[in-house]
Amino acid sequence: MRVGVYDSGVGGLTVTKSLIEHRLFDEIIYFGDTARVPYGTKDSKTIIKYSLEALDFLKSFDIDMLIVACNTVSAYALEELRKNASFDVFGVIEPGVLATVNALNDKNSSILILGTKATIASGQYQKLLSQKGYENIISLAPSLFVPIVEEGLFEGDVLKSAVKYYFKDIKQNPDAIILGCTHFPLIAKAIGEYFPNSVLVHSGDAIVEYLRTKRRLRSNADTTTLKLLASDNLERVKKTAKTWLCGLI
Ligand code: DGL
Image (cartoon, rainbow, N blue to C red; front, top):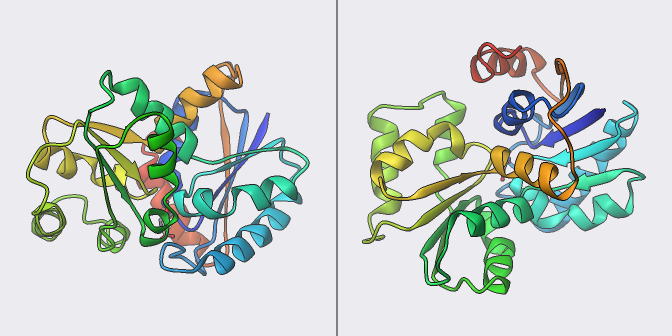
């Protein structure tokens, strides 16, 4: 099966990593809209417009399914994408919520949602969690985490200061933290060190679990070939993929 994976930039490679590790697909066509990243600071009209353009582009690769790795696109454009595609389109928010609920036993558990400004403003994670009976929710948009990851600062003082800055008002260790942005799994270690007792929910693992349980996809691809596409600076995307997908491609 050939799947398209779409993100605003290189962050969706974190989701791609989970898909390759779990051998769900024979082929992945990855498209990062690197010319227009970040999406997380844009308004809904722009996010939907960019998403439909990306869909048109990916259609020419004859994909059987589309996975929207980007939380921001998943929050705003899923419905429009589904209306305009003849194949299944999956986002990462519903899988992330299901993974969170599966990890928690108690409806009073505290949940911290981390995402871009747009994702948090959409209220999508909050709404779905609330429908499942979870109300003890804090949501936060630590915007500087995205450029920090883009700079490759996966550890060190800059990251530590940013983590401290954004989390300083959260006095209790949340029971679960949703890494609701493609970039955040890359700094999961630093987040986990600050909140050592939290379960961290990663979009990549969540979508794999979702496809296995809800769509009955099996891990039966011998190998997964990855084609990388980008709207700007493909060489940089390839270089990043080599680092992030270490040993897998
Ligand atoms: N890919 C985006 C997301 O997961 C993060 C980067 C951006 O703002 O475009 O929400």
